[in-house]
Image (cartoon, rainbow, N blue to C red):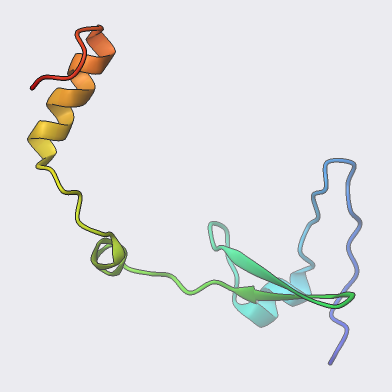
Length: 84
């Protein structure tokens, strides 16, 4: 394994990913990074970007129509309680 830079942890637990690491991962602003713990090591990898279609396919069925869900929320927010 090659050392690719050093970063300092802030009081808020934040760290700037060194440029060498960002470049090696091809990471750019807005990308998500995954941290894996292996004993006293932390491994960092770039999370794969997923299409919205792939995300929706993983979503379990709602069990209710979107309109019924919106009505329920509207009723709850207005203080009327759910419709039956």
